[in-house]
Length: 283
View 1: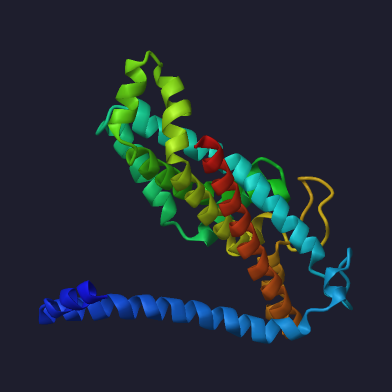
View 2: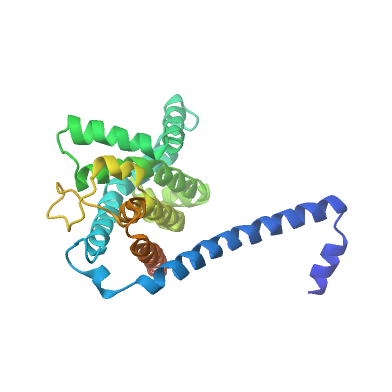
């Protein structure tokens, strides 16, 4: 504590200004998050009732269970599509492609452009390409592929930065022991970069769960448990949107928002647990 006081005494006036701005920004961020969470809990928790978890949705119970099942299916399917493509693309950019080449610059510019496109544009593209041109119609599969394209830049960038953070000494040591490039990547580099890759996956899960604009055009708004991947459906975020916009079920909308918040926190906690177990097993 005494060292901290001495450090603060040596600060110049402008250093104090920067110090206060940084702390104010951090406190404001936490305050906004706490306000949103507390507001949703106060509005929604009193209206959570068993009928919200009925297997079948009706106008009487406003069940969110079909939307919950659809959300979990969307998360699993989208990650299964996007994560392999994103990770392998990042491996190519960092480990195989010539650094600074024109192809690498084009791929990075493309991913950065995709990251800045509004989600409503992805929805229109998914509707035109997957639903109409490929003939899938509004379906879970069309929604999964649309979301996979949306989160692909995030997976690529986080994986690429994680791979870049691995010292070249790891690669040189593996090559010196006689391992090939492919074996080095999968046995040395990827396990070392796993924490950063998992962080990107967790961020992607939040993007999938909270998306609405792109899914309105691609999976429809039918509230039912999907029979197969070609069925229409409705995620929890879409369910909250539909309940809130009708103006007839505001209490159920807040209650569904609480469950949506719990699902996001639960999925993030599960991902963090899997990451810890994976890293423990590697060690």
